[in-house]
Image 1 (cartoon, protein in one colour):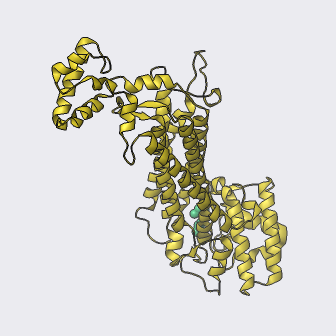
Image 2 (image 1 turned 180 degrees about the vertical axis):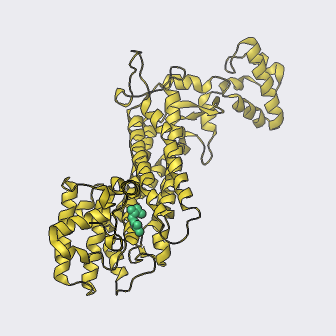
Length: 477
Ligand code: ARG
């Protein structure tokens, strides 16, 4: 049962069939497709476009189709092109010719736009949830490791000491902005396209407001050609997903580095690492590497969608079918990456002593020594030069800033006195007591704010989930 055989004499060429089919991937949308069909069918009956008995039969049949597909009783066939055709054809097997009335006042063009928006809004909610879980993990780790100091880096050179919690909470901020991008995209995504028909609207007294209410949309599209012709909401998801993956990859890279014997700051649980087939001693951070390695797929899908849309004339074009595999793969990459990164962090242990030693090595307190001179009236630029010479002396004599004798300091500048030896990792960290700084009080404040921000994300998600139709067959993807 093809949906469009009427004006054709010949069957499509086999290769054409293979080339144009989308059932191999759009079968994933069957729940969304059937939900949309049920609500469409109810609307048709309410408006007197089909009669109530037929509508009841169709709805019962559609529920059965959902079950049949979920339980693998429907054989997918390339000759039946896509999920929309499969659903209708199964419906016809179940209820007979009445099935033919379901597609009144609808086109596959507005149908597929609807399915994709229904799918993606669930995904966006899951994504924001995943980000919130990851943030909670960061917060839990920040609290557990509250007095662990770490070297802060620039250029991957030890730069200034920070609290490890401060380092972790930097990711809280990144993932928070990511979540905001998804939330922002949701507002434009959660708009009903159904009722656009093929492109021009429909010559039936349909009730789009009813459709929107039943399907949990916050609004209806204002232009039928736009409704079937654009996929900018997919681009927005992929763009937000790309940045999230970028952030995940930075964290992943730090996990890879920090678990090496060169760094030795962090170790992961066995369950989040893998071994080598030849080197028995190996414990590799493959999960972190794969999170890092999968970023390119998502960037690629973003570019793919942007290119697909470029220069497309209005309204629907079959090119748009290319949106789905890209989107699905991005979703299947991002959601597990979020969950696994959180799991990895929860399983991690730190070597606090090694971190503390690294935090003060490599002249990490040099800026503090300069600030010490500034506090005694030396202009910063001059202080910088003086400390540069102090560092030279340390290098020449094999000392650190902490054990360089006072007379060596004073040989460079008479402003130094014995209090220079009081500078240590904690005076450095405590001194950075500005909003956004690494002083413990500031970090505690930021941690508390982080918990509130994440709670806000959670309630944003649950508020929206409550407004979605509660069809049980939509519960899983
Ligand atoms: N499989 C198509 C897609 O994904 C569904 C819409 C088909 N519409 C059409 N006029 N051929 O875009």
